Image (cartoon, rainbow, N blue to C red; front, side):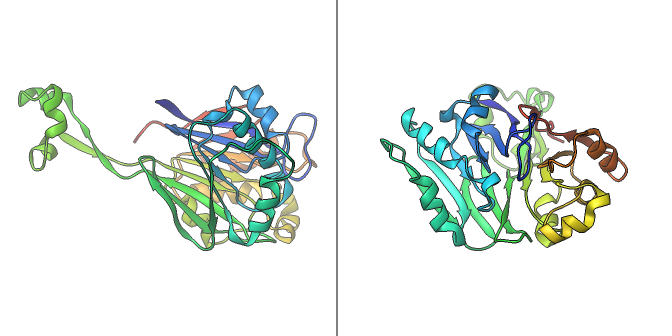
Amino acid sequence: MSPRELVVLGTASQVPTRTRAHNGYLLRWDDEGFLFDPGEGSQRQMLLAGVASRDVTRLCVTHFHGDHCLGVPGVVQRLSLDRAPHPVHAYYPASGEEYFGRLRHASSFYDTLDLREVPVDGPGVVAEGPFGVLEARRLDHVIETYGYRLVEPDGRRMVPELLAARGISGPAVRELTPPLLDEVSVPRPGQRFAFVMDTRLCDGVYELADRADLLVIESTFLHADERLAVEYGHLTARQAARVAAECGVRKLVLTHFSQRYTDPELFRAEAAEVYDGELVVAADLDRVRVPKRR
């Protein structure tokens, strides 16, 4: 079972730069690999980051602007070339189903992939499994956009000392039921991951970020350019950080930076003014661990 971590493939917004590739984020979550918003060049960035195509089990697209989806053809074709042994579920706004179809079959290739499309036509649960629950929420951009949240159910953690005091060990642990189970364990809050891309501030942003252990959120602009953020449907670093502070986020990852800015430390300084938790200003090929359980 892989550690829970985010592999950052790219961090640029509309225009890539010499140091930043287009968007792309691979979340390793136990036996699953959630690939979010693969922009142009994601297949190559995966190679540089040490991410195999077969690591991808689920593809999540927030919206159909090119910097968030033009990597889909390459990733899909590579999965097919490598004969991925598992189905890959693809989630995207239903209004962009035609775009996804074009991306899915952008060129001729030998198609062996079991790709299962799940168009998202409203907020709510889009998938459930051993990983937990994957939810979508509407965001406020210039075209239909959804953010995603992964929620692990709450559970219980066994306490070795309490088990030993009752002489319980080995296979007997798995057979425990209440009330004895409650006496030898403590609550274990499920972990939460949230992914928020192109959007103005809206209810969906806060719903996704609520109590997230790890929040990946766009911060396209700095506060001085807030007027542009509102006009084009984006967030500033200060707004993203304030969301994290108000929602009790444990680790904040800022990304999706406009090419107009060359110094990433400006985003760190601005966010730190309002958020005092663990802060990451993402760079291409970064690996960010999901925080340990509370």
